[in-house]
Image (cartoon, rainbow, N blue to C red; front, side):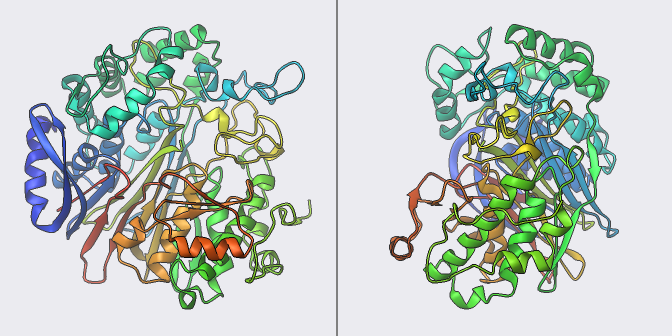
Length: 570
């Protein structure tokens, strides 16, 4: 069993020191402190995630003979403890994998609407959207899928689940010291935690949090112990389920015992498509990236974007117009395939893609009011992890609470935060969600339905073997960030570090503007403005985690510089 986690972490970082680039931070587990490592080059296996403790937990699983699935489970569970703004038990996610025997796998553990949900759930008597209800408090929560997804993943692992969950239990029970970024996040959300909870959660205290403080989560440790002892039923039945339902009753939420007992993760047919000799694997619906990523890659495939150059006005303009058209289709057509007949084959067909780009003009900005979805007959706070093992298994996982700290509601006595994923439904046609995304009837609320997601965990195969493992958080910016990362690597021949860390941009049809990061070149902004584009500077776009397996067998793992992301390998 994996115990004495603090010593394990200190040992791992020493072993990786000669092959990694890192920056210092004051954080650790108990008396131990660790450094954040941004890149590692290794030969046997690697893990990249949003937090050093989580990446190192996954690495130790690989060292002890576990495979990439085992490491992904351990990493997710530790993220649920040390990265509460997005790591979770009370949310959901997607897993994409390429197995060493050639099998591709997609596991859907997206949250679902409770049985008492209906399309007018967040409308007032006059039919107006009350968006605050889909964002904050128990009514905003969908039925959590993460724990079911972990046990579905465990079917492909090698080690006992009890070993994989123990590091998370230890960290929750004994505590860990937080970074400055984590302290700022907790302080920023203090009032939201107070207003959306009937009892004061552990994330709120009298004085402000600061870097180096220790966060102990006893209730969460006990919830994890119930899962360790009782398996999936330790979450969806028994005491934890009772605590969830009690929290619902306190805050007018609607998740019931039956909703919890009946939740199941699903294995879906993976999306696989060719791109210039590579094979790209990604998550199918209800992940919108399963349609948008092949659309965008196909729209750009026959255009010589490499000749245009990285982040020139010409290449950004082309990619923006591609993103605009894909997101117009997202708004009209996409939703849960179990509830809607989504024309995926048509939307990703060569003939449709060619038609979508017929009105493209490289000399000026398109206009979203004139570019609609095609005609077809009849949190941003998420978190991603990438794992690769010495057996050749590749795993990409993106998981979420939706907004930062989800609904801001902590299940009293259970210690975990509930998601606010109900906002990812179209609460009313034409009304944007928290990310500004417009939806239609295909993504309307219905009992048992999975809400549309932007999460796009992706694997690129070269010669039928894993070559790139990638993904990112970022709400509706997720798919465009994955798209840009792949183009950076496959077309612009960039290093993994540059592909991850160079400034990103985003267009999603509506609102009709290009979002750019602060480091996006001013000269390119000026040229785009002359072409008719509106530019809006915003904060960081995503936190991309990439692993690349080179022809010589060397593994490059890079964590995004936009956060405390950490690459671990051996």
